[in-house]
Length: 154
Ligand SMILES: [Zn+2]
Image (tube, rainbow, N blue to C red; front, top):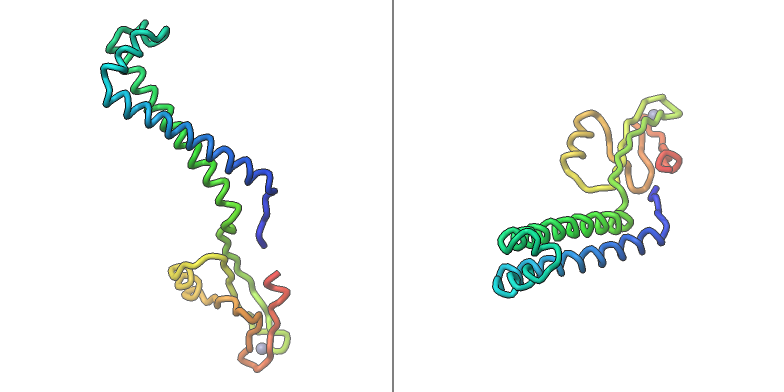
């Protein structure tokens, strides 16, 4: 069972990702530019109505750390949006187990079903006596009876 989240959320996540990436890049570019061209940045700090209040060094440091902070924030939001966007594409990891009783001999068959690939999980389940759900939804019991698992899969 794949849970679908409305398309509108995907669009918003994609939009959020683009905006956040744009801000992240502009903060990073400003940061690199400020570090490379100190003279220009000092002039900017001196003329800026807020930065100039903290003196040249203070204003410069606030400007640099402010850019680092906002770049980090923007990267964080970009990753968050990307996670939201891509979670729509990949189905959630799911592992379920079920017990099926043979109608003929009443032997209990233990089965597991999962939506992801992981050999360790397979090993873990098989060690505990669970069999993977067969693709054709059928198992043959020791007594010879065929058990249909279509209902179990649902
Ligand atoms: Zn049986």
